[in-house]
View 1 (spheres, helix red, strand yellow):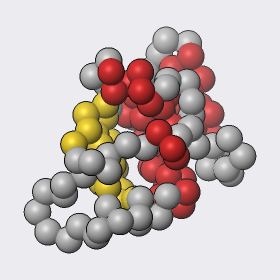
View 2: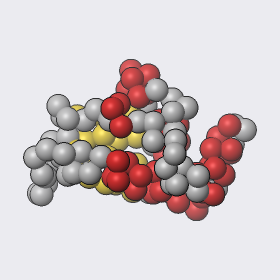
View 3: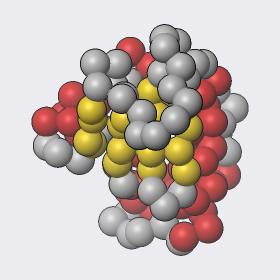
Length: 117
């Protein structure tokens, strides 16, 4: 967790709220999600997997065949709270997938080698 993104005020505030059993305020949650998505894009550059965290953001990452039109063949999607937990190591990738908290499609849609950030 050495990335400067992890130390952002929004990420810290959102995680604190989650730890206290509260839902982070919408602007804070949005900024935290986008900050961590940017960190993933930096760590795993590429365009073969689309990571979606509606309604706040989506990125393409991981090396491999580039997707340009229509629905991408490799998609990862989850809610904002799950993304914060998975991205920061508070929830294991495999557990999130097994519990159905993360929806994955495609052979490249495995972020476990790049998480936690």
